[in-house]
Length: 235
Image (cartoon, rainbow, N blue to C red; front, side, top):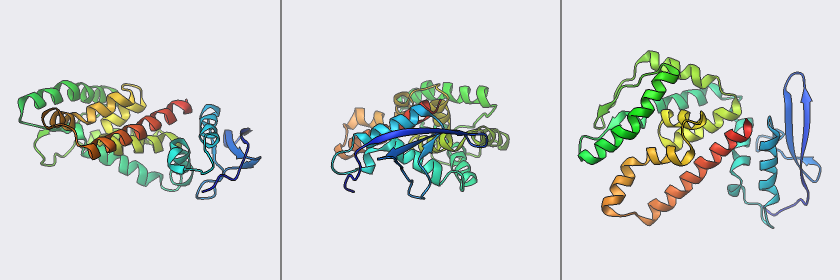
């Protein structure tokens, strides 16, 4: 859409019920989400970063160039009304966690998976008392019910904004273990992404990288880094 505003600002307010909120305004009018909610977030730092996305737009407003705005919109429009569904979707990435499916061959890839992934599964077990089972091949492995319950309890603690970021992280990484390690600062975005790409990187070392696959890889990493920044600005 064509740019229709000149000034971008952040207006803060507080209430005993909702706490502090920081809204982004365009020419003095609050930005609205697609669901017609006011674009207001609980952190001044996040609101300023979202405002900067609007300030950087040229004659045409490109929504795809505003990842923080997109995440905030989702958190405000979707997370409150569909919280249970979001939690269940996130837990699915623990039920079929990427880190639980190992290669038998070649030995070099199997060793790489073991070296990187085992320590992360140990961290998950120690941190959340959620030990996940692993297997070789593509057959589905059932996870211990008590571990999935523990993970669900951990995921429920996140507010709408952090839950939205966690959902984005898990969907990109294919792993709840990696998503939790990222959101809890056990890993940074590039480290979590590299751990999720072990198989792809191993194949690329042997056969080279496909241009389209590389383009998609960069896009996914960019989205993951935006989700990480979103969470850090909430703190």
